[in-house]
Image 1: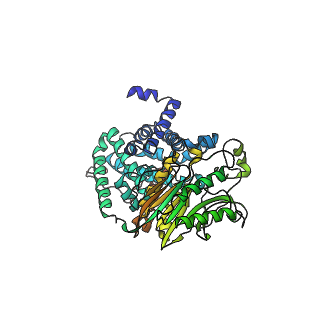
Image 2: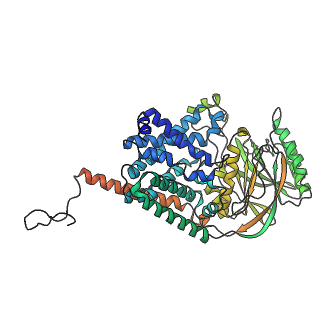
Image 3: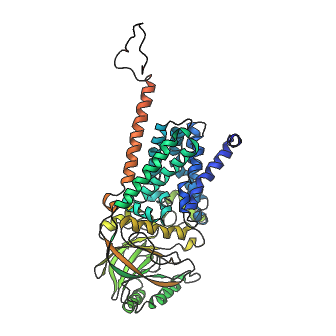
Length: 524
């Protein structure tokens, strides 16, 4: 241990060690999907920040660990963003500096049982505050939230229906803090064990109490995944391939056919021939088609990504324009300043235009669907609002073809499981090149994933469920609770600092005197 301490006295070696420790949680996400590792992955980072010689160094450890975390979780963006990924990670890592400082504040030195017990509430709350801020669309969105690593764990999905992915993140961090206490703070082992028992009891109660989705019907939804189509006139070739695959669905008694993001590269108003071909597919299959148009619109200026519903007589008029765009991928923030990014990476040459509101589409037979486009499936609030507005099925249309040989397709497909569990609504995740997936209203997969090597059309029997989950009803209450904890913490620290500046708390009455005329000893 002393050898390690001496090795860490070098600021550079310590910074590298913390950055590596911060990167460890990436193994809990797809593709490795070591979900169990999430419950101990933060322990090395916590122990390093706890042992920091000063509060300033602990805050810097928070920054270094956050940098490693952001790079690891988003490493697949490197070919597209190049140097920008390090710049963005460096800026967002500032959010973890208070978390590092708080780790030392509550766990450093000889932590008392009281401080250790407070840490089990404060540190997960501070982590949630970080996830809340970086979830803002302008900062890249909520990709890589720690709780989303639990997408394939049945009990965790049940808890997601209670408090969303936020509750899962809080619990995962709380368990990591508990393990760190058990490992490093002898005096706090009893509170740590008590915390584990209390957490297990609370989660078990929530698991048993949370209402299960009431399945009361089903639909047959087909996903068309054309696979990789490159070369000259790729948009036309992709459309032809999608048309061929969709024709295979004739006679399969499907209720809806879903194509992936950017599945149509031309505005249907300007290409009526394509609209007629899609309408003919609707007549052949006996189902409406939800396609995604990525093109310059004829009825208004600019390029939009739009989910368009097409029936046997052509476009039905129901359309959803993507609202939350990917920074640099679909628009460049402050283009007048950062426009040079187009010459460095694969940044957007022209900004896409945003939609203004979410849409619930009526497909027929009383079926209502709520479309989401690309990384909008990472935002819990968007799927929750669609469920509130009456959507029976959530539909995600995506294209991760740029990141075909990375962990991105698997990570993206896993998010739909959480959105389904949170809302109690089945979710279909349809892509151009994989991974496509479908989940039931409890977040469990319905059939196998369509991998990145598949070019096919597959029919899924999707159960429908109604009722409102606690998360849909009460929203992001774990976040509100975390902010309340941090507000109380800030007020307490402020009062303490003010008292110290004034020379400490003054007694309201003179101290009692003993028979010998000296002040009585406190506690005697």
